[in-house]
Length: 123
Image (tube, rainbow, N blue to C red; front, side, top):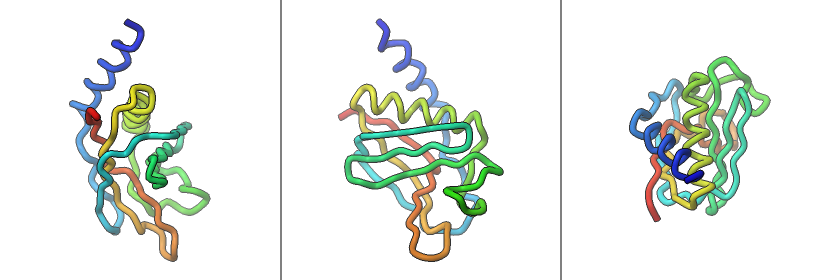
């Protein structure tokens, strides 16, 4: 019973989330079958680490991004909370994610995957 409520809330959130339009130039992409091995979130960002080793981020509008000025696509705080709930649900249940992202939003060699949408799938 205790796992049903969070899963129901996450599935409801999934139905309400649409991919977030990119606000910065970059390369659009996605990663299928991301098994979430770690995730962390605070009031300004979300970090999702997949078993493949890729690290994906979501940033709140107006916050610095990994110590850099904001150049990656951003989300509002409520969207960050929803993305965090989806990532946490995937981590806790073992379900996999498709992560839609924009990368190369920093000049140089940094390959930052800025999350533009999440889709939870069964195994």
